Structures are given as structure tokens and as C-alpha cells.
Length: 148
Image (cartoon, rainbow, N blue to C red; front, side):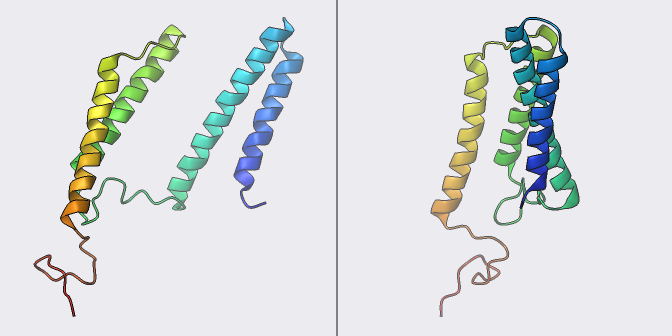
């Protein structure tokens, strides 16, 4: 097996669902619903834990997450990341506090759309301008490409 963490996560999820389905008293349809919900919750938690463990161990490199191809910081990437986390955390807290999934307002979708469009436009400008990274072997100090 190439990815043992995935197999372990699946086994723990199925085991949890099985335990809930057998030992939780009550109506079978309620037990099935609880088993599925808790199973998916545990699977999501374990996948998130695997990603965080891979980041901590160095298997996943996030050092270039917010940088441009040229090596500088990307304001549009940072904006998209922050808006996504803030909105995601807000919805998570609403779900936890009220125990219901809220309706998504159009303002939130517009905010995420503007942020994603900003990122897309900045990448388009970079691509059309022919901007290269600082480590490009064919560029000189003036940013112009050397042709031979």
C-alpha cells in the first residue's frame, strides 16, 4: 500500500460508524443517520490531520504559498486566502452555534468572487506581460531576456 494513512482513516471511519450503528440505542433510521454523520466528521478530521502532519513533516511545502513567480509577496493571493478563511470560519461558527447551515448571502459570494477575480486578473497580467521569475536563467539584471 502506497498511502497507509488513507487506509487507516477509512478503517477508523467505518469502525466508528459500525460502533454507532450497533451500540447507540434508538430508532434504526436515526442510528444510520448518526453513524453516517459521525463517520464523515471523523473522516474529514483525519484527512485534515494528515494534511497538517504532512505540512509539519515537510512532505507538503507551503513556503511559496503566497509568493509570486518572481519571488515577491502576492497581495491578491493573500487577499483570497484571508477572505476564504474568514468566510469559512464564520460559516463554521454559525453552524456550531446555531446547529443549522445558514443561507449564503449574495454579498459573501460577491466578496469571494471579487477576490478570486483579482487573483485571476493579476495572473493574466503576469502571463501577458511575459514576466519571469527571479531565478530564470535566461534573464539578465534588467529583466530582459537574453537571446543568442
